[in-house]
Length: 184
Image (cartoon, rainbow, N blue to C red; front, side):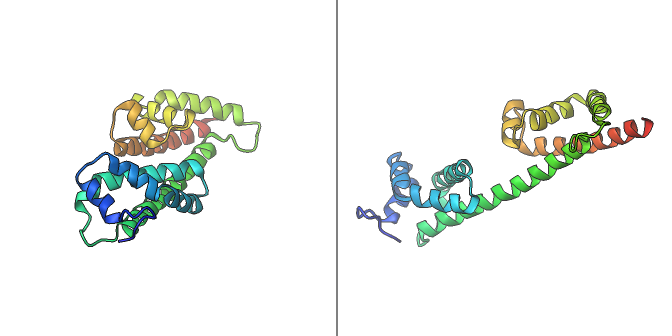
């Protein structure tokens, strides 16, 4: 394993993590904070997302220290976790952007067309026709800009439930919008 410039080997940090010594977190941040943050920022080009990815990596190190192989290169393991976290973030952003585009398309708000007012009124009527659970998720996700984890925290539900309700709500909104727009 690699040594830190102050002479403390990475294996010592890993051992401290395994023993759940709180000072291990300080050593982890001192040793890997800057290089992980730089790598995450270069990957994501977003300082806030990079900080989040590094925090998730540190949490994974704390939580998984007992499961890391004794002969594993701790630094390599950390960077592997970081890049997996960054890839997950990118996939999440792509899905969110796709959903947001779908919602904007659904609302007909792009382009300032004359029928926008009718579409907005139809959206209001459709929202009222949704089940309350679906309406709340739509409001949190698209009106308030909450991500899945924030909505899950607010509602006290698992993230998977938020995702499935969002998907179902958008599907139902599209169906209802189609019916309303056919009538007009």
